[in-house]
Image 1 (cartoon, rainbow over the protein chains, first blue to last red):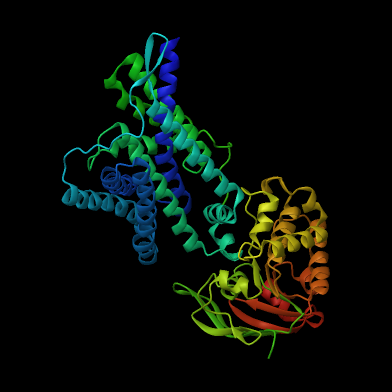
Image 2: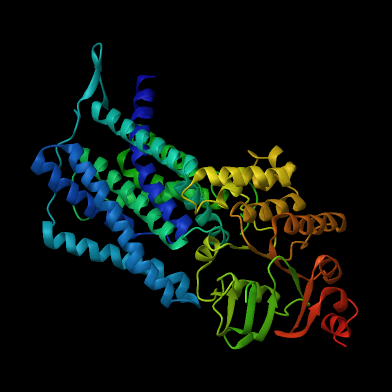
Length: 298
Length: 237
């Protein structure tokens, strides 16, 4: 019983970080129809910047704020300097579908090389903002730590903020309208190109938080966020790629599921487990768990 | 010259010339029906006027200001609203959100709320459905919502693309009656694109018949109803 509860709590903590990455991917997918593989690179570069600030100032939260800012600027930059140009040049044929995705892969490689040049390939670590030691209840110490709790709280705060922005503000309405029906949004007077860039900025900022949180209990290297990208992507697919709520539910499900595999079956199966979930979802519910049984209209 | 002046407007889709030197004018406060069969270029015309399509040549002026070359979001701010083909609402959003969208470009939310209240007065059914998803509306209600959204931006020139598309005959009659009332009440200038020629010409002041991308007849709506060009445009003889 205790092990079950521990697994669940750790699973939520892990899943909440996947949720951020997954949301970042969904936000970009909804607005631009591109699976942004560069998101891992953007998050990684933002995290390196956050790491620099956090280790110099010795204030984790200042590092986090800088990572969010850097992530947002990077996201907006990728859309403004790459995607806009790309969509202007590639207007017809297979290039339209393939070029943006390949471009994001290229960008991932580019960012990785730049980070390698500046910071080198060795592992870095950030002083965690809370204890990594598990809570002690009575005589027993559980693996769930203050850091885990802080991660869940931080992610919850970000999700609530995003929900308010998306559901309660004109910016949120513009973002949703531009994603669902860009042409109608434009006819209603929304500057859709600018709105899309803002969407990329939000995604980038959220990715930066994911990177900082993963790094707070792990190491940072030019490759350290790759797994996060993979799990974030799987979570987004579980949620149907379109739905922000779906991606969060997908991420929590995946986080809990993988932690169960880790605790009850074995470390070696975690990665396989992640892909098994992806395959099963794609075979059984290719539109994701949030699909309402009909194809989304234009 | 005030009103809408379209001169020698041409639009190409790749190698296909969809519109060839289209010219017509609409006086302020008048309703012009653009009619023609499927593929005649009616939708292309409206899309060029609202900035969704790039024309290859020609000009279109609204109250002596060039419209061509401006983006749709800029034209909305100048009082030109386009209700695109096929019940242009966003089904994933609520009725309220669809309406708010029409005024989202304003910095003053109060203006938008007042405009929404006016639209709800015009279409009381929308008032009862405010928090429902637009997905749940009937075809006629959706068309009212689409027009309502455009009205929230308080346009002076309204471009309507086939409001009757996919609606039952009784509902079509209602929609046309509503459009007629609206434009009189609000003093709107309307360009109404329709396949349903008779219904459109009945409420129109002027008619423009388009066939294969060219204007084949332009004149008083009441006279066009009997014009052989009308039959030719539809039946091909």
